[in-house]
Length: 259
Image (cartoon, rainbow, N blue to C red; front, side, top):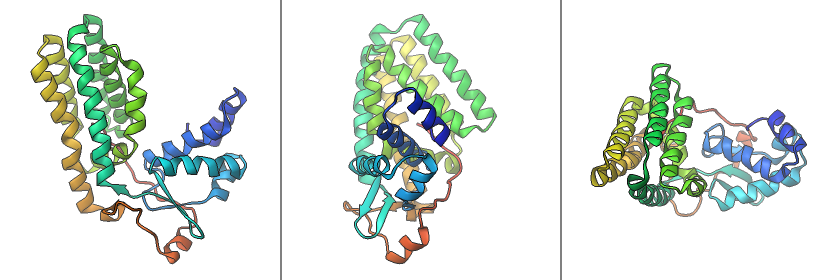
């Protein structure tokens, strides 16, 4: 949900406005509709979404707590640049939970589970043929969520999803540059084959290698787009003239990615 129409429809069903605004803004940041380093205007967002400034301001504070925006008094709010430290931390959480789930999934997997995973693989191959990067990204999310559900820990996936916001921004940047949907699908297929065979050691190593591919991708992205990254533990403070020029606008980065 990233539109004012979708937000109003959800509000009519009794959803909390602040929560909805937070979901919209978070989706735009993680999906790179709001580019790292771009300015965010409370007034513009409130007008666009048809809400008061209060839920927008509260949502931005929550996003700052997640490290997705940086708030500077007297200057404004900016989408945070990607910090490799944050990507590494997100990857650590994701890998720990997904590999732990896989170990249990090997003991619990059924023929129906394998069939459902293979349906997702077929859909991913179709997305690859259509060069549908956003569709592939969503199917990748479904695949990893389903893989975790096989272990009986489907409720742990939202924890993974929440933790990997910084990681997802890097993942979405990588695919247009690396053009490796076929590679990723092949890795997915290998994990499913080994899971079906009950080969825990090889399945675990296959999943580990698959998840860690993001680190080499980050290096490639950073070499081409250093302006989207920050080396500092503290946020990279924008110049006042940059803040004035940005004026709450953003540039869309095409494409998406997944691992």
